[in-house]
Length: 96
Image 1: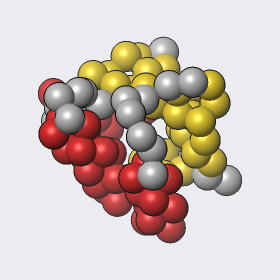
Image 2 (image 1 turned 135 degrees about the horizontal axis):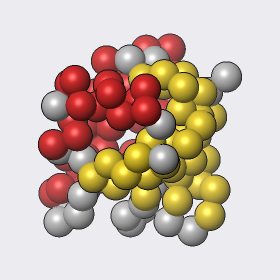
Image 3 (image 1 turned 30 degrees about the vertical axis):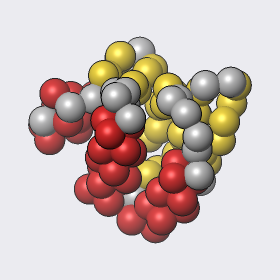
């Protein structure tokens, strides 16, 4: 089960599977956010290319505002995906 929510001020918690089936929901949620948020990925089990696209769009929006996409509590499997895709060079990724 996929969930995305503001868990505390400035923190967006993402858990479950961020795949093609959930990408539109995640994109709409992130697009509605105002300001800069840290994305807590402690509960994220899987991210597909569609999910990576959602994070890339969030990164581009934040970059246009002079900020950086900050991902925290990234587990080893998800960190590997970011490293293999080169996204660890784009985002600020803090591993768990």
